[in-house]
Length: 424
Image (cartoon, rainbow, N blue to C red; front, side, top):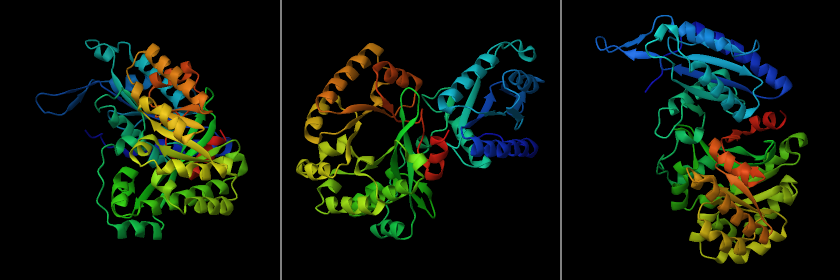
């Protein structure tokens, strides 16, 4: 499905208003939301196979939306079908979703122009500044992506922009070892940072560094699209070395008022831990960045630990002696938790909330209570991971988990956007 092209007048008006909103956020902090609404008030003509809009309905919808927004907000007609709302001073993703629900309720009453059909069903795509884009064109494009995501199986009629969904299932492109090493040599690798939120106030407790490849031909590539090739050609440890060093150097270069109270999470593989040079590399990076070791968290995937020979266990004392934090990442097989806690002795266990989708609340509470008990026994605490749905957040808050990570809070962000988030 494609969206109709924006008319030049409406788009130009919207972009002008967004420029002013961006300046206000840059001066005062905070966020604003762009909501792109596609009311389903159109029908397909059996004669022309074109789209026929009920007379006067677009204007009626536009006028009705005006009753909800504040004087500082904007409602713009982009084309014959889509309406954009620029909502200023929106406090994060949850507030934007709340506004979207109120808009749905407003449209869920009969219109005189379509009395025979009653209420309007509508889809909404939501993008937040600066989380989902730093320029008006980027925000508009990402709101459209979110709007199109409402048509995917299992989606809702209100979707927050989620870059992860644009590459789910994307296959590795079969890069050669030379291409991958050239990416390192030519500075094509970049890091995005996904904030981790303290609950329930959503303040930023830390960030996880995530590797991307800004490919000159294919654009921004995610790990699924080049990690298998890196492992095949023996380049993976070189990528991990680059990510460890640059993540620490970048984090250390941010202003102290941005990183105050925050920790930096960096993904490392068991194979990287087992490399004889890893402790020395860790020492060199800590010295070069001048970061306190306790500000660094090494995040190790639970599945990778199970698949890797247990040689990594003997390496952990040397790593822990350096004072860095250890995180057991992506826990989705609960039966393995006691064993991995005993062997790894992490400070944090990141529980993948995807495993609880559709589960009974009492069942989830029981599982999380058991995990909390196991974690406390080994001096660890739980962090909820992949929190992408309101129902998952309810599980987290009801269970007393103190930290969360996921697109419902913040998606992965370019470094330039992290400071704007932390200062809101």
